[in-house]
Image (cartoon, rainbow, N blue to C red):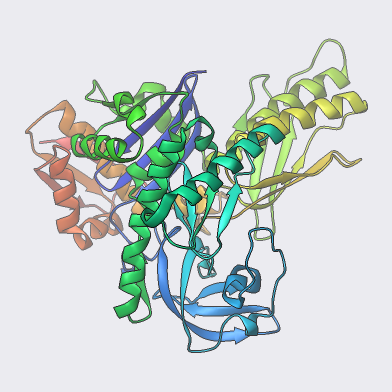
Length: 506
């Protein structure tokens, strides 16, 4: 199964696609400019992720009834810190200690504490925080507050786990002053193919990243961000590139150089797989990804047999309905149901990952009469879900054909990032956001500049979209010039609705 990572470094957005056998399997978007409503860059809005940032915050309120505290971390809304995530502050050591102390034993109002964002602000909720800060590396995760060694849950087999534990403990024992004193480590699945030397060097790099955090804390005043996670390109290399990754294609020269520099520091075996994509066409055109990404906001997903699944989200849960459509197996109803359900089970895991759906998901499969067929569908669903790095659990199928899935919420789903509520959208209920339309315009401008180098480009769009470009004028023009579109004019026209626009060379 050839695996490729495609990184599109656009004028206003970095998009990462994992493609397996020519099919999109994972998608990540990170916007690099353009925040609506005057939001400050870094607040996790409009696609900017805060996950991984370490912040010196100040406790605003302690709520014993909720066993939680609200912490000022410099955002519009205070962050949420639960007692379980704060237990390391109550001197309860040990990776396996699941005791949850009272929140009042962990923090006090007005106290300055070091916290880390583990979940971006979602909707009206502030960022989710943890006091057990970590710094992830290629092979290991540094855990300053908890000494010892732990293993990723994806490392399986008693023998392999024992070997990895021994290697981690030996690394700490032999590390000396080059490692962070008193810190622990979680070994990632990538460490299973690493040598003890590779692991030690990764731990040393983590210690080098942690020392400045301690130094900054001595002089910082809360709220203050003391550590930012890697940029999107480096983070992609660290978290997505494995031994079975055939190549990493990047369509930006500076980003290719930065990626190769990171590989030389942290993962030299991957440097040779990084390639600059210079055309023809756009990077995501290779596998027709643009059309598929556009379809990810549509509720209906077709299946190979002619059936489909419908995905609808509410505040409480996401409902997935499986329909056979016009497909009918010649051998009978049960066979029809089995075939459509198996196709749906395989597709549901992929759609959940691509759309970033979290929380409770309820799947309504077509009724199956035979227990063996139910088991087949659940096996395929389990396999599909197992490719997900986000913690996910699956229930058994009920007598009504319902299967419940819970997936950890980390960020807003794709549909909320790219669209907003609309009361007059032909019954669809949502329309594209202004910044998502503007970013599509910028991609079209890049395409036009590539097709006609040096020629002036004129963009005609809805007034509110043109205002977006005016509000971010310097950023937009600098980003477009870097991508080969230095001469662009924007014209507002009442003729266009928000999603309509025209890009033409003069």
